[in-house]
Length: 483
Image (tube, rainbow, N blue to C red; front, top):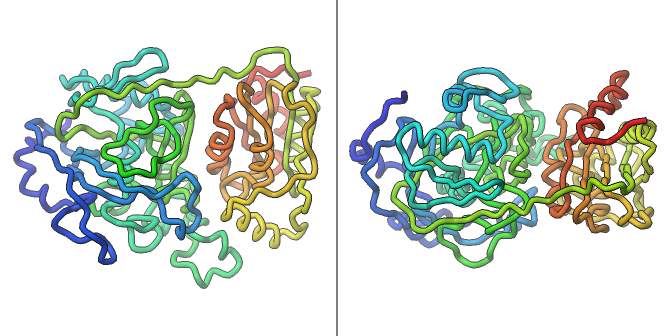
């Protein structure tokens, strides 16, 4: 059992912790002081590796000038109350001690647990609370979960709490002065922040490309942020309580996100992410029952009892299991994705549709890299020259694309926005050079939130001789009959 210490004994260092907003200190760049939202700290024992995050106000989201920001990062003023957060991502040892199993893709007691769904994380919080004699935070009714804000047990942070803790009083894309190098965070180190527009001429980069470890690292790795929290950028992303939805533009206090939704939010980026997707403001999404080798848990607890409860209603989307047709829609530039699509068509006999542009990208590799990052940066929606007739006849749409700059090519975004995918099942497949899906699945989920998402397939380049077998296994996993 972990050593505990009384909160009263910790008061001697509490005042040295930087708050999200501190009424005694001016904001950055000469801005007005932010107001404090501290509550009276309750008398309770806190696990040794938790730190107090002092409440206050901060600007959540990103300014329009921030490179590689997304449209869902609308900046707005948020005030959060005091809370305790674990210094570290939850380890495999901690998870296995409570649940009796370890689902992680990588193996190591002090590595972060990953491959856990949001529901797994919620169940862990309750089980650990019960074991330690605390009041469980969550009531689980099937897929719907209610959060008792007065409970003293373990819980997930809200999006606002997570971003407040990550920023640690800063307003820049990352909490450190410059963007993180591969020596400061565990991520796809070949792709530091703003590499996209400086790929062929890196003289303007603050941080040069570095090591890509292709694995998680111990939770105590690298330096902590100013609040004493480790790996807030990188290693594994971390689940939050919130459903995904648009931010309110009004000032908010202790927001907990939409009351219902189809996707949950996770934050921070992981070992397989580009730096742009580790920014403090970046929001990633996933169904609450799905998991990833890149996604784990960081725990929080109340510093003082809250009031009321928050009921989360999961708007489950059942993909059609009818006898409707299957469509294979793909965008391909160099031919790898086209080859995968043709193999899928050979095994299923499904309709094949190529997503083509009215003004195609360059056939020159270096040029198309620039064109692709340009369109992603401005979230362009290129005009398409081909269109699907009678999309309503298809129950399942298998969407293929190359992983470009850790996301989907923008012609695929144009395709997703052109049709109504409500009630359909989207099953992605992508070709990649080492980045697997990147954040492409989040991009698809945000563009088609009313569609169910099947199990995705990533193929290294063309897939080689093992492609037919890989495709067969993937189709079977998605309950699609083969010839």
